[in-house]
Length: 164
Image (tube, rainbow, N blue to C red; front, top):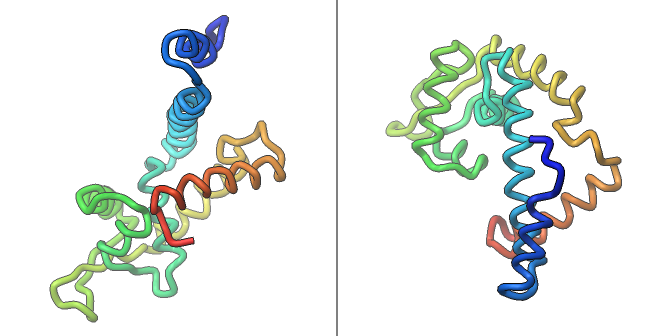
């Protein structure tokens, strides 16, 4: 965008005059904007691999499992997304031959998504690209990143994202 001013900072000054303290509003607005920036950058890095960040996350999760396969419900739970999103993501990965669906032997009504060898290879390649780009976080050193994770964890715990 290359604006000659920080629109969040400007909005915060106006907010102060009209409503009072703007710190929380500016923090939330900053987080939301950073989310947009990071998602665009990460999706751009993953586009040559035919992936979005959501599909990449699903492949990584499957690659982390011992057997390379997980029930669709568990994928949604771990990625913290709606079942419809999981179905859409797995559909696209399956069409790309990166994942296959198979019956869940532990639950006859359930389905497992299993990462294919091509999926594992693509995860390795895409991960190398993302790590080389610092996952879009190149402006921070390791200590700053650890502090950021800690600060955001506090919000996640307060929201009930997981038990602390």
